[in-house]
Structure formats: structure tokens, C-alpha cells
Length: 213
Length: 213
DNA sequence: ACAATTATTTGAAAATTATAACAAAAGTTA
DNA sequence: TAACTTTTGTTATAATTTTCAAATAATTGT
Ligand SMILES: NC(=O)c1ccc[n+]([C@@H]2O[C@H](COP(=O)([O-])OP(=O)(O)OC[C@H]3O[C@@H](n4cnc5c(N)ncnc54)[C@H](O)[C@@H]3O)[C@@H](O)[C@H]2O)c1
Ligand SMILES: NC(=O)c1ccc[n+]([C@@H]2O[C@H](COP(=O)([O-])OP(=O)(O)OC[C@H]3O[C@@H](n4cnc5c(N)ncnc54)[C@H](O)[C@@H]3O)[C@@H](O)[C@H]2O)c1
Image (cartoon, rainbow over all chains, first blue to last red; front, side, top):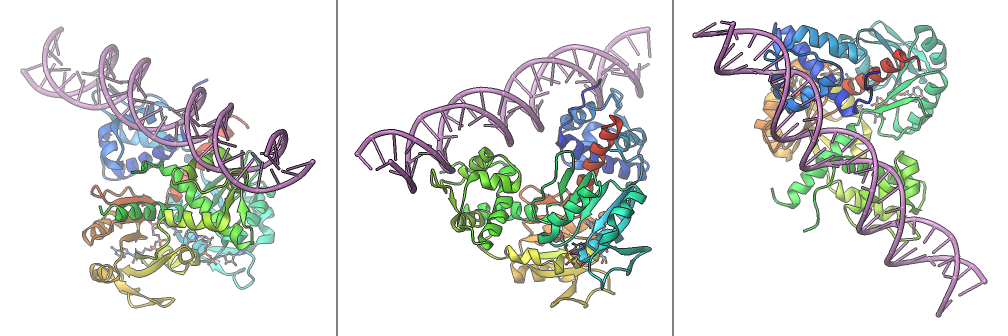
């Protein structure tokens, strides 16, 4: 079998390349070189080629890559040749923003359920989606065949929600809270790190200030 | 001078440790070992010690670390011993959620300005913050001494907003859009990667499905 | 058809980052 | 005070990831 040990960083960059290719395609550009991709997304050309080489030979020497084809390949590799239903728990401000965010649907995601346990929110609609009580989570994710759960509740409740998600059969969890979530082996947990990114910035700005740069 | 070449991953983890220490402190726990921190945040004890060692000797052999002290040190290292005013551009759903997000202020951030160029939004209030026209961005960030800008506009407008931020003297930019933003050297750009994280998940779930795991 | 050009492949080297092992230090107990 | 336990700080090792450079292949223009 082909090597399947792909660095995570490579997959992340593939996602970036893919979105860049989408833009090129929309602008009617048909061919692109590794160098142009590199410039467009801010990495080295060698990196681009190396990353793509994990998955096959997509380019033509002397020419570059066919935009439409490479886009199709990257989407396929990322699993985006199918629709992914999502279940969001927490219909607060972030949950609302996520539900109304168009860019998710563009790349094959569909919010198939939003849940809250606050009775003032349950029953309300976000777009054409009705906020359901958390109690219905297991039943709905089963019916809708949802494998990915999204945590958008307050930090202190995130672990509790994660446990429910695991019990309901979620295979992956995307966590927006700054809490560290523990899940059993085999369940994939990913964090969207607003706080970490901000604190990386303050760390660096702090250094800079200390050195008067 | 001390070694200042700290891996970025180390700083990210420091941010996580710091938040974990905050929780311990709130629960009245006074001492903690590298192993306990490791368990709490899901890394190895060796990693914790190695990370902390970049910044000094904070622990006592045979005992562990003093929670209050280590928390104070981590905050100091991360630059969180001062207040950081932020300027958010884009008062849409995400911008609104960010403005009302309490967990930012807990760690020393303060939203000092929200901007939009849509006249139906400008002038409205979010909490006790008034949405200002984008035209006032340069003047307000100067007055408020803001060094960090936050991009919460639609993907296609993100670069344009970034350019304005750079021109207005921002030293760091936190970008929530999936766009790749180009900035001059010396300006720090960080992305909060919702899309990338989701696509890492679908990549892995796709693999799993392909192998019937 | 052939040379010149361009850009991918491929594999090895370098750099970075993480893991593991261990000696030193502090506290505890007899 | 001396042995013993615990846990750190540090050094060495291993793994991963990125960068570099040489080889190869395809296309374009003459
Ligand atoms: N607001 C942002 O821009 C932002 C950005 C990144 C991360 N975050 C994080 O996302 C989380 C949510 O933020 P928010 O601003 O949306 O908060 P919020 O208070 O507006 O929303 C939380 C929602 O979760 C619901 N909830 C609470 N417990 C629940 C449970 N057990 N089951 C189901 N629903 C439950 C609440 O009723 C509420 O509607 C926080 O951890 C925050 O730090 C927020
Ligand atoms: N909604 C989410 O949960 C979420 C999560 C992560 C990332 N994002 C990304 O964040 C971005 C914003 O998402 P959103 O849901 O808030 O969109 P939105 O459409 O609700 O808000 C965008 C806001 O930006 C304003 N705007 C547009 N151009 C502007 C300009 N040049 N200057 C100032 N203001 C301007 C608009 O008037 C609008 O109010 C998108 O790129 C989205 O992909 C959204």
C-alpha cells in the first residue's frame, strides 16, 4: 500500500492550497506552478511540491499543475467530495455565527443540527434551522448520520458536552472553547484556538517591546 | 543573554498550561507536579518540564511547582501582565460574538474598538461599545494605542482590511477568515483556522472510512 | 527534430522538535 | 544525620519536518 504517514502540517497546508486553487479557478486561471502556489499562500515552492507528492504525481514538468484537476484532487484527498453534516452544541453568540456562516457550506459542510439546553433559546430558529433541546442530540445525530460535533458552549461546560458527544457516537469533535477536552482514544478532538493565537501574539509583541525592536 | 529561540509550539503549550494553572488556583490547589499538569492538558511530563525550562527554574525538586507563582510567571512570559486593547474590523455575526465574549477580558484583552463600513451597523452599540465607521480606524487605534487588529470580515475583503491595518500601524493581526493574508515583514499575522481544523477532521475520517476502521 | 527552458521528482542533508533517561536537589523519615 | 523518596532540570537520543540540490521529463520555439 502507498505510504499513508502524511504529516499533519501537510494536510493543513493542503487545505490552504485547495482554497487558493478555488480562487484561481474562479478567476479563470487554468495552470499554476508550485512557485505561484507558494507565493500565493506564503510557503516555499519545495514545500508545495513535497506536500503534493505525498498523494501522487499531479503536475507536468515544464508546465505546472492543472488548476481544475488539482483542485478536484485536493478536495478528494481532504474528503470534501462528499457532504459532511455537523452538529453544533451551544446556540449562543458563537453558535449563531457559525450557523449563519456561509463559507462552511461552500466546502461541503452542512449544519444539520443546533442544540442548546437553555429553554429561552430552544425552539427558536436560526435561518431555517430550529434550535433543539440537548436531550434530542443522540436521536438526531443518529438520524442525520452526523459524525462531527462542534462545541460552542461556555468553557466550563465543554467537557460535559464532549462526553455526551462521545456517548452519542461522534467520531470527531471541533472545540471552540479554550478548555482542554479529554476524549477516549479513537475520537478525534481539534481545537480552534482563539486564545492560543492571541497569546502567541502577545508573547511576541512582549519580546519585541523588551528588546526595543 | 539567555536563549530566546523558543519553539512556537512551546509558547502555545505555555498558554494552555497557564489556563490550566488558573483553574487549579481557582480550586485552591497550591502545588502541582509536571506529571499533573501533563495529565491535565494531555501532553507528556517531559514536555512540560522542557517547555518551562526555556524560561527558567520555576520548580522545586521533589516537590513540584507552586501554582500561584507559576501562574504568575506564565502570564508574565506570555505578556499578559498588561492589558491589550484590540481593534476588531467587521461587526457581523462573528464580530458581535467576539465583542460579547467574556473569556477574552479574563486574560487581559480589551476590545477597544469595533469597526464596520456598513451604514446600517455603524453607530449601533454592542454592549457599551459603539460600532465606528472604518474611516475612523487609524485615528482611534492611535488614540487607544492599539497594536493588535482582528479581521472579522468576509473572506474576499480580508486582505483589503489587513492592508488598512498595516497602514495604520498595527503590529499584529488575528485573522478569522479562511483567506491567506499577505503582510510586510515585521508584522505578525495569525490565523484562527476553523476551516483547516475541520478539513483535518474530514481528511482523517475519510481515511478511516477508506480503511474501514 | 533538436536545443533551450522550465518545473517536477526524488533523495539526501539540515534543522527543528519531541521523547526518554538520568543525575542533582529538596524534603521526609527514622 | 543519613538513607530514601520524589520530582525537577538537563543532557542525550530519536523522530519528524523542512530545505536543498541534482536528476529527469515535458514543452516551446527555431
Ligand atoms: N464568542 C466568540 O467569538 C468566541 C470565539 C471563540 C471561542 N469562543 C468560545 O466559545 C464558547 C461559547 O461562546 P459564546 O460567546 O457563544 O457564549 P454564549 O454564552 O453566547 O453561548 C453559550 C450557549 O451555550 C448554551 N449552553 C450552555 N450549556 C449548555 C449545554 N450543556 N448544552 C447545550 N447548550 C448549552 C447556552 O445556553 C448558550 O446559549 C466559549 O467557550 C467561548 O470562549 C467564543
Ligand atoms: N461566523 C463564524 O462563526 C465564523 C467563524 C470563523 C470564521 N469566520 C469568518 O469570519 C468572517 C466573518 O464572518 P461573519 O459570519 O461575521 O460574516 P458577516 O457577514 O456576518 O459579517 C461581516 C461584517 O463585516 C462588515 N464589513 C465588510 N467589509 C468591510 C470593510 N471593508 N470594513 C469594515 N467592515 C466590513 C460587514 O458589513 C459585516 O457586518 C468570514 O470570513 C468567515 O468565514 C466566521
